[in-house]
Length: 231
Image (cartoon, rainbow, N blue to C red; front, top):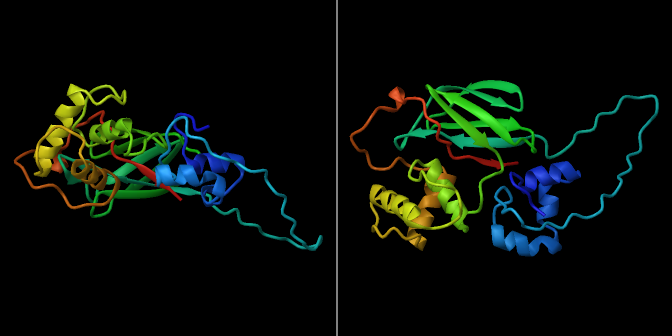
């Protein structure tokens, strides 16, 4: 049973399997059809994990042999934006499980780093901004909690992540719809959710420009950037 902060990559790593081995099992077909993305599972989802089989490799006893473990590491991909504009070509520092890494985002504000498949938390510092990352915690976009999480990561929602589409969530949806230039209803209709998924989970073009601060002048903020993890 999937717990908080778990995804198929972390579960497979802990159980000694490749994630695609578990994902392709016939017994997991229902989960595969429901979730689509192995990196986004819902708390309470069930995964069938088979018995591990011992693999035998013949080798000489008087020689040195090298074995490579597949599926390690995983990759973290994060696009960082400020006021809908990517923080492109900006130096960053990422602290993950006590390990400090430094790098520079690309022209779309994307950073990509190798991480342990079971990493849970990280701290990203970039251009005066600090982001707490909760890896594996993003719920599917088909769930109400997943809608709230994406709106929050994009800066439109500031309420409780409770999975309830109430007045605060509808106000956030309306603001997102107005900003994106689509019909404003405050409802999570298919067109809105498709655009929300595109803007949060995929590389995309910036939204139409508005008068506002330059990304280079971004102040420190406790907001969380969008995140995804795959192998």
